[in-house]
Length: 303
Image 1 (cartoon, rainbow, N blue to C red):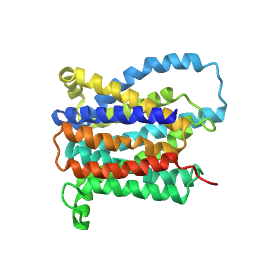
Image 2: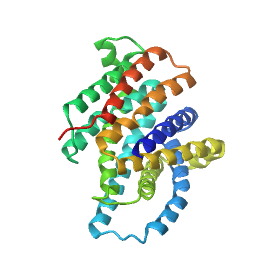
Image 3: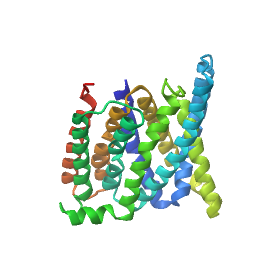
């Protein structure tokens, strides 16, 4: 079931990111991010209330509640940092490079799952992650050439560096999600959990906007981009809920790479939509990346 959740999350996040970039081209950076997540939150709140009424019959221990609260709070703050980095890179960078670079998450999630969650990791999984990494590098440097100098210049670009840091932070959100929703930890419903997380994110973005004195821009953005915000918000709700559900029911070292199918879809669909260059080379890089993903998903580790 986690595979289905992961694929739904990957596709919805790809289309959402395309809509995100379109809105970012015409709007303020942080106001756009806040507006999109507020719409997502509005969509999720009534769903969460219904689920809460149904699942409220199943009591949780005090420790589980504590795990859930701290998991949601920490996950919300980390997601705010990650998305702040991502929207900056998305606004200023090449879509078919920035999005795959953000998908370096499996490299870091592997260590999170192995050393903190004590999940099984073997040599085959590590080898598969290396293949994923090679594929992402090819995608990343294909706009220039296959050279160390080109790779260094590309990675040290502000947009690319922001996407890279975004991947680091997103790896940590997998851990906090596991603590908030895992049966052995917080055991919170996935949709309710992500609603709390997005609420924390929205408050963080709102605080940032208020500090900058840009609160009046929010109303103008909603007036000019209502349909786009609703469309992206719905996809954001679907993607976030599906991602959280996949993490809850699956192992981190398998779910995280599977979610990276997002990278392949982004290069193909996003690259074509924005008419970006060198797509054949980037698609080859994504195919290499996909081989690594499939290998990780279907390897059965021997203890």
